[in-house]
Length: 246
Image (cartoon, rainbow, N blue to C red):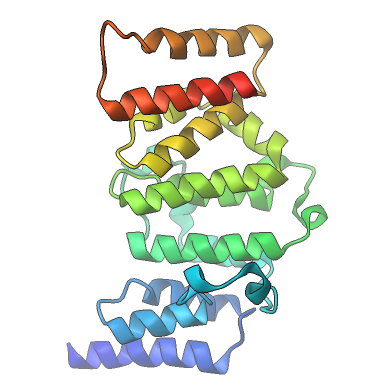
């Protein structure tokens, strides 16, 4: 056990000291180290991803870091975990990484995404674009084994991505309305609101009749004569507002 801890410590230490922020393999090691049982290894790994004091850092502080190219980072993660190529429905709801590793991975990928130029993310085939690959990673993070914190972060990240690539995100989830509606009753309030926002974004890709049908289904579920638990009612109310707005 002690030898295993020393090996993990050495791997993360050398990954953070020998290589810079743009080195994809070493950043992947840091993502795995972010879920280590040892606190010193976790903190060292998060430092290597510029996430240790993430909540206290202002946006101006993060601009100075040279993050990896989003395409290269995503391709490396996919090469290390080929099951990401499968749809989330085929993974039996099991997480491909631990929740803490997924949390660190998503936060770091979003920093890479924000640092990327939009033209570099555009490809002729949207299904193979970096944005689509990002969506797949976030969808896998929504597996039932994931923590509420992970689900909330993944959904929020999908919303953030939609601000830069609205057409790709709306068209992608216009065919997954049922999945989004199941998330409206999530136990986490942030997850519910993000799911509602995504439902509104997806509805913008629907025909007028389909959007009206969706809105009708949402409002009819808000039946005061048959009260639901708070989470369901809150999710439906948010979704009704976002779909109406879009």
